[in-house]
Length: 80
Image 1 (cartoon, helix red, strand yellow):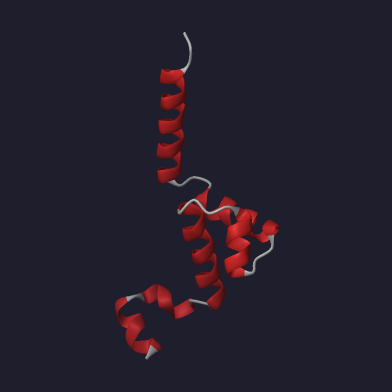
Image 2: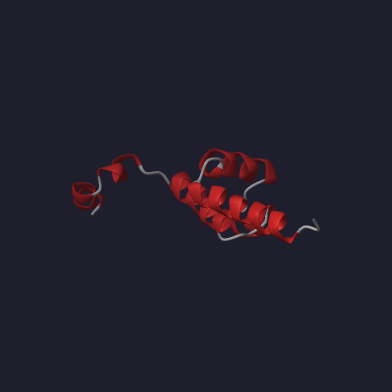
């Protein structure tokens, strides 16, 4: 069955269970879950979660857009 799937998605050739766990951590982080929530679901240590999020989310464009939005909101709402 895996061989059939690899025909349409070559990246499945070297997919490991660990990759799916890292994906879960990344998706939970993008959903706004905190480290303790992620750990409760995945069983990762807090250090491991930090490393995964740093690796996969460190330069994610959605996070950059969110951060700029927060900066604009803060700047526009501050007392002048």
